[in-house]
Image (cartoon, rainbow, N blue to C red; front, side):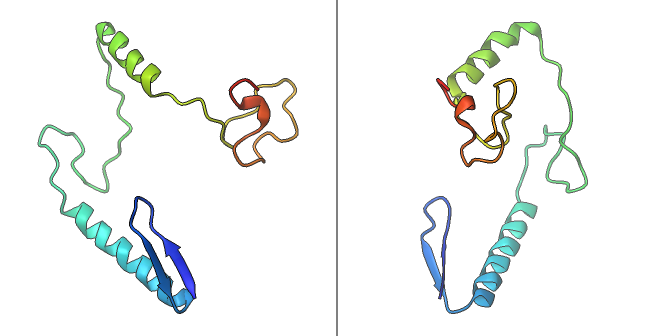
Length: 110
């Protein structure tokens, strides 16, 4: 049997074969695509679900808004180590970008 656990509290599902599990995953993805395609976006959004549109716009903000956004970043930033962050040590340690959770050098207090 193949057991799958859904992220976000969706529970566990068990299938008799990998093929049945793959079919279920495919059906879930198709259902999510249909739901996304029918989503209603606010009219003032530049990109409203058009799959051809890109979300690479840079929006210049007034300098007065900097403290508000800086506070948002400060309040939500988490000092966590990941494989995509390079080792801060010079020269980089041998575990840089290879160890799950990142190397000890890039962890808080490391």
